[in-house]
Amino acid sequence: MDGPKTATRTGGIVATLALAGTVAAIMQTLVTPLIGDLPRILDTSPSNSSWVITATLLSGAVFVPISGRLGDLLGKRRVLLACCVPLLAGSLVCAVATSVVPMIAGRGLQGMGMGIVPLGISLLRDVLPQEKLGSSIALVSASMGIGGGLGLPIAAAVAEYADWRALFWGSAALTVAIAAMVWSFVPASPVRDRGRFDYVGAFGLGAGLVCLLLPVSKGADWGWGDGLTLGLFAAAAVLLLAWGAWELRTRDPLVDLRVTARRRVLLTNAASVLVGFGMYAQALIVPQLLQLPDETGYGLGQSMLAMGLWMAPAGLMMMVVSPLGGMLSAARGPKFTLVTGALVIAAGYGSSLLLLGSTWGVLAVTLICNSGVGLAYGAMPALIMSAVPLSETASANSFNTLMRSLGTSVSAAVVGVVLSQMTVSLGGFTLPSEDGFRAGMLIGCGVALVAAAVAALIPPVRGATAGAAPEETPDAKVPATA
Image 1 (cartoon, rainbow, N blue to C red):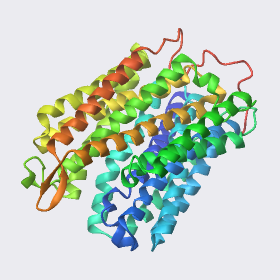
Image 2: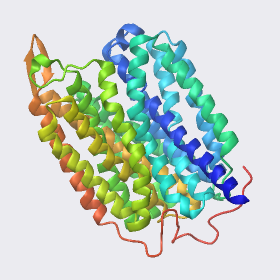
Image 3: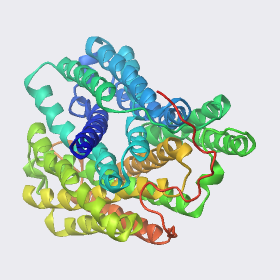
């Protein structure tokens, strides 16, 4: 009698957390179709309007590890619900914004809610039966890519055929629906850490990340040799070193660096940076290639909406591949799945050398690359959770998510430099050249191959499966009611 009820309850949990991750990812790509129109919409300069993108990146990087640690301390379901508050508030602020400052503030609030995905993955370990864990982790982890792939055509269609404010009213409605589903279907985790929140560590990591990511994202505008760019990089180095020293000394660190330094966790995080780079390089190149005019000889002349529709199947491919990744991890282990995923990403980039000349060829490239991303993204949390105590799964997964974000940020900077340096002139406009696009794809291929090599060095954990905690201490968890 309990079998169907348990299956239904498990399905509701996984569906809710996967949808929550998809919605969070949609929030990140929400304004992409509006980038060119933001200066007119907000009556500001292109430089100021770019902060609408940067604000989400920075606040997400700062608050993802904070929300992970709070999830370990206060309960993951409770913090999941709390993450919906800034997502909702940010959507409402952006929906009524008439100038750039409130829009930036709203986008910053939306970034504060990006901890939903690592919290959801960590909660799965606490509440699902072992036999359902691998495939569920793979699906929820891949939801970020699924949302990114689906969010672009949806946002493009709304931006083209309706008022741009509908994007944010819609995201507000989705956030309310997610909060209601979490409240209704997701149980409280029985696992808690007994420690205290590390306020000094949270401030130090946040300040260090802002000083690191701000010049990474704005360096192309400011100049890579500009004093402000170099000064922020230097400040980041000092702050992050001081933060690391504090984390090693404090009793209850925000991020347990001793656990993070374990070879299995360290190499997984290193591979995550590289996979994040590989995932994002093609996501930057393909939209531009699709929208460049036919007159260039290599552009594919698609509208913004058509571009989004050509890219949407790649997001759906991650949804298709994620259960296959779960089965592969169950049969061969998540390390094998991660290596396989990285090699598939590299194969996708390699195929671009022959397939970039048509929309169907570009579609094939994105399908191959995103198949690899789906495999890799599902394997990384399983590797992390097999090497950390139950009481630290949320903070460890959040730190891994941060590593992926660092990879995408570096990818944006590197690809941006390549495309800005390898250009052609057409009708008085300077455009990225075909050689620039191909160079960017080759860089993505090389980075994916390095990711596979790093992943191959990850040591196995005997007797561990996705979600096991072989190094957990007996007092790592305490019962909780919320």
